[in-house]
Image 1 (cartoon, rainbow, N blue to C red):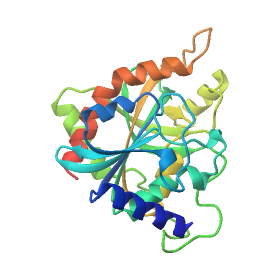
Image 2 (cartoon, rainbow, N blue to C red):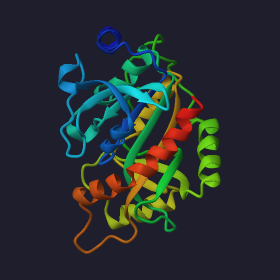
Image 3 (spheres, one colour):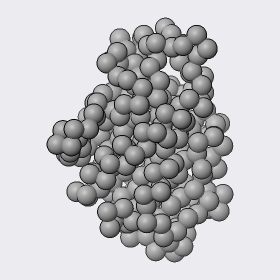
Length: 270
C-alpha cells in the first residue's frame, strides 16, 4: 500500500508540479464547481496509476489541479463509493495520495438526504460530526505507523476552527448554512421510511453513501477536514414515487454556487 501511494503521489507531482496544501472532493452533481477554478492540469482517473475509476453518473472521474483564490488546489471531480464494489482501502486511496503530495487540508462535499425536520431541499449543511453506519472501517487490518496511529482520535473529525470560519462568513453574508451530523451508510439503495426515522432519532441530520471513510483516513493522517452536505431531498417526507438519483443530481447542481462561496471562505484562511 505505501509503495503504491508513493508511486501515485510522485506521478501526480511530476505531471502537475503540485505544491498546494489543499485538496477538495466533490460529491454527486457538484462537479460544476470546477468552473470556478483556474485550471492548470486535468487528468482522467483511468490515466492515474493505481487510481480506481468512478462508475457513477454525476461523477466525471477527473482530477483537476488549479487555483482558487490564488491558491493551488487538487480537486477530485467525482469520488469512489463502497457500493461500487471497492474495498474501503481502495476508495480512500486518493486521500492518502494527497497527504503524500503535501496536502494538509481536505474539503469534502456530498449530496445527502435530510433527516432533520427543519432542513429544506437545496439547503447546505456544514458537517460538524458524523456517525459511521457502513458496518466497516477503512483502518481495519494491519496498521502502517508511517501513515498514522493504530487508534486515531476522532473527537474532532471536522476541524472546529474551519467550521467557525464558515459559520462567521455565512452569518456576515446572510447565507443559510445549517449545521449537523452526517450519517454514512453503504447504499446503494436509498433509505426506507423507518431508517430515516431511526437516523433522526439517533442524532443524524443528513444521510449519504460517502464521505465518512475519507474523513476517517484524513484524520488518521493528521489532515484538517471541512465538510458540507447539500440537502437534495427531505427523507422525512418521501414522495410516493420515492427518491431518484436524477433528482439528487439536479438539486446538487443548483446548490453548487452556494457551496463554492462557503469553500472559498475557508480556502481564504488556509
